[in-house]
Structures are given as C-alpha cells and as structure tokens.
Length: 156
Image 1: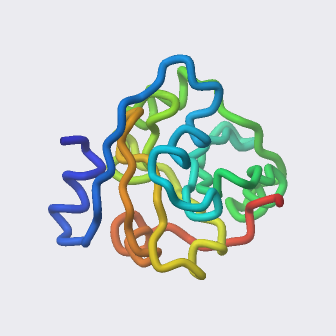
Image 2: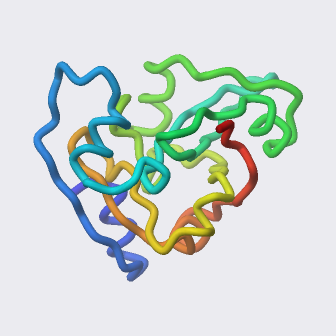
C-alpha cells in the first residue's frame, strides 16, 4: 500500500490498481507503463516535478505520448520560468522514487497541474507511488483528492 492508494481509499475515490514487474533495464518508465497496462499512450500520464524561478516547486501531469511544456506550466503556476527539478530533490519533496512519483499522496504536497487532455478521458492512468504500480482514476479524482488544476501544459 502506497500513500497514493491510501489517500484514494481514505477519500472513497474509485480506482483500479495495475501492478506489473518493473524492468530495471527499461529505457523509459512511461513507455514501460504503457506496455504493461495495454492502454494507449495518450491515456497513461507521467508525473513530472519542476522548479519555478522563485525556487518553489510544482507538478505537471502529462500523457506519456507528450512532453511537458515548461513555459506553459510556469505560466499556470504564476511564474516566469520552470525547469525540470533535480531528481533527488523531487524524491525528497514527494516521498517517491523517480519513475514512481505519483501526483497523489505526496510527502510535501505541491501544486499539481494536469494537462487538459485528461478531461476528455474516462480513465487516466498514472503512477501509484512506486515503479511497477499504476492506478486508473477518473479525471475528477485529481481535483477531489489534491485540488489539481486542468490546464494546457502538454506539448504534442
């Protein structure tokens, strides 16, 4: 049980857990999750932590098939610039390991911005809090559980 799953259970948010054997030689955690879940890459989302120009941090959640638009997430977070956070800093802030960072149940909750594409889906797949663990939730779960905002932050 991870903090992400505990939070969803505590709030009574419906979710489905998908576990798979993590391949330590996988080149991309996102591509591995797509292959393991058997769903389209547009429905599997990756969780990325950024550092804003004032030193604060935020989380961007975008489809595996897209890239995070750093300028767009900076604007969404009320900042001028954003850069990818140092992985060790992201791990300390979220309480999760890189490749297993979930937007849910973070150690020190950060503002979360989910690409608006998620609202077109019935289910969004994202990390459940460790490598080899995905959870499927409705887009509403992001707002209900963590107050996430849906904004256009993916670059296709």
